[in-house]
Image 1 (cartoon, rainbow, N blue to C red):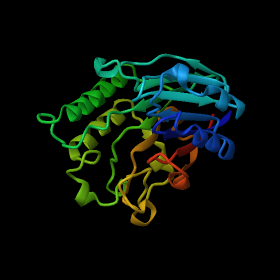
Image 2 (tube, helix red, strand yellow; image 1 turned 90 degrees about the horizontal axis):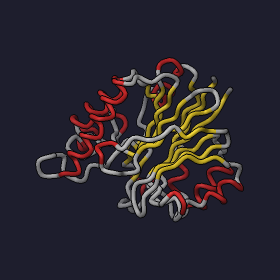
Image 3 (cartoon, rainbow, N blue to C red; image 1 turned 90 degrees about the vertical axis):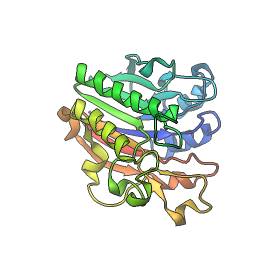
Length: 262
């Protein structure tokens, strides 16, 4: 079984339902994982996605913020979610394909502006969330699993436009990179995107603040596709659909793709 997968922080699934439909029709991944849906599940425009061939959905939602969803052309089983840091936030959901592969879809907290948990509660929340991810996967080491989502950290020096200038900027600070590495090590997760594209600058997010985001190209790779070691070698064809950042009224994130032959 071969299937393609994409992950995309959509920044409001209702506001950008037409962009989701555009992606589904033009790129046709078998599975699309969305983050920051900003919608209760019953308000997600599932009929539009079903008309595009995506009749299966597993989602968790909230009004106005957070929210994760897995849209699929393939049959999927809802296998639950975890309420990380016991906040009641819709930041994780999992689904299982018929071939036994489990897909974890995450929206890790952004962490606010100051990389200091003593003065910025949001940053502490982010670090605690990552620590719980690490402990959970270490305690229940997964097999045949894929982890995707907006992890809100650009770990490598070439995952940001300027390593030196962003060392003290939330999303690329050493403490965040270390916490993410511990999550990755907890189950031996393989960064599929960098397995396929091992060298060079690579981004999936560009700020709305840039007057011309494309020309400035001050991006960060915040969106990730990981796989457990038992299936990582089956992954290929990773790419970032940069053009989506330039669509009309876009998300500030671009979709990240991978294909798995299992």
